[in-house]
Structures are given as C-alpha cells and as structure tokens.
Amino acid sequence: MIDEEILSKESRLIALYGVNSQTSPFLKVLNTTFKTLGLIDFAIGLNIKPEDFAYMAKGMPSSKVTMALYEPEFQSDIVPLLDVPDSCVSQSGLCDGAYAKDGKLFGKCFYRESFEYLVACEGIYLAGCRVLLLGASGVGRAILPLLGSSGVSFIDVADGSVENAASALEIAKPSLSGVKTDISWFQNGMEVDVEKYDIIINAIDLYAHSDKKLIKSKGENKDLVLIDFVRGKSSFDTLSKELYCRKVGDFQWMTASALCVAKEWLDAKVSCEDYETIIKSFGR
Image 1 (spheres, helix red, strand yellow):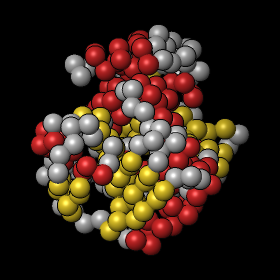
Image 2: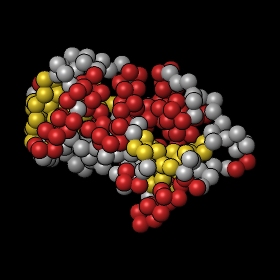
Image 3: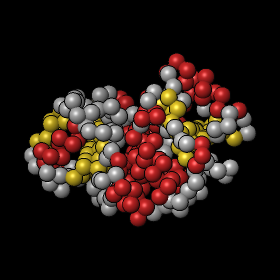
Image 4: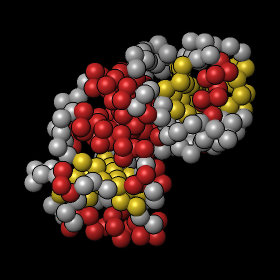
C-alpha cells in the first residue's frame, strides 16, 4: 500500500483490483512509471475476492477512487457492469480500466493503444509483415484492427474454434482492407513453420506460462519477433532461445500499458525515452 505521508491533496489515486494485486508486478511498474514522469499520483493495490468483485465495481461511482485498473482475472467480469464501454471493450469483451463520472462507470480497453506504443518504442515495424496471431478472443480481437491499419501484409489467425476466428476477422474487416488473411485451427503444441512469419503474437492465453507449450517450431527464423502478453516467464521465452530470436513482453508490455494510463488519465506527456528509462530501471 502507499504510505499516506507521501500523498498530497493534489495526488490522484488509481486502484488496481486483482486477487493478489498488492504483490502484482504491474503495481510496481505503474508507480515507477508515475515517478519517472514526475507525477505526484499513485496506484494502490486492492486485493479482492472474485465473489466480492461485482459489489465493488458497482459501488465505484460513489466511492473516493474514481479510476480503476483490473488484473486479467477480472477484465471480462467487469464488462457487463459498465454503463458506457468504449469501442475496444465492445469488440474484445475485455476491459482493463474504468473511471467513474456523473454516477456512471465508463469502461476503457488499453490493449490497443498499449500494443501500438509497445511496437513503436521497441522499433518493431508492422508494415508489410506476415503475422501469426494466436487467439481470436479478448486480446486478439482488441489488436486485430490495429494490425490491419498498421499495414501488415498477411494475418493468420489461429484459434481453437474456426468459427471464432472467422467472427473476429469479420468484425475487424473494416480495418483489414488490402490485408490477406487466413485461419488456422489452434492446438496446444501445434507445429508452426516459423519461416512463414515475421511476427508471432501470443494472445491465446494470458496465463500460458512456461509449463505450457503453445507451439512447436518447424524450421529456423532468427529474424522472427515473438510478442507475448503473459506476465512473467512463458513458453515464448523457451521458444525464443530455441530459435535465437527476439521476444518482447512481460515488463515491456506492462511499461507500455502504464505509460498509456498516465497519458490518458493523468494528462502526462510520454515518450519512448521514458519507456527506455523505465525498462532499464527494472534491469531489462
């Protein structure tokens, strides 16, 4: 928790709700980001049991905390409780932030903006790239329109349900003009010809840690970039070592998200220089 002695009357608080949010690495990234940007605002971790979540969420418009972020375990549960979801929330079914105004709860999906900031600060150029997107729900649906508008040349959407993959592509169709698309049936440990892609994105499972083998690589591709939304070690860490290729995720992803929160809600000016400073502070 934040020491009240360091708070000023002008300090704004953002609550991070999760089962174990007080020990979440994202909480540390948020406050490191705010400090790096010279803000006097803070994020506070509030642990909550799943059975108490709906009551908490409904009561936020009348509470002192008017801005909240949600850990992955609550990002779909909050959606039906929102009064006004943004377009990304409606499209993805995920909400990782909400704010209260005039007695209403407004839902925000930061995934799309955070992904855009992540690839920009990491120097990943999407234009002309061939992308394998693992997952056609949640995060996958959130970033599909951005991939299309960024000028990728080809997107292969892999999902356990072909119908779900087709639905995701149909919803994102207005942003996919001129982009070739395909659908693959996803199975854990499925073989993937890595030479066919420039980027592989793991949006299939936010909890797919190192004990789960998402894909098995076929061929070699040292120029491949793996982008992962999993916090902590994941199967993509092993895959990047096998292929001697680059993997982006974990603290990079959390830092990009924290910067987008600071920009959107705290009116902060952010830059890739700030991103690099924060990443280095964590020894990454």
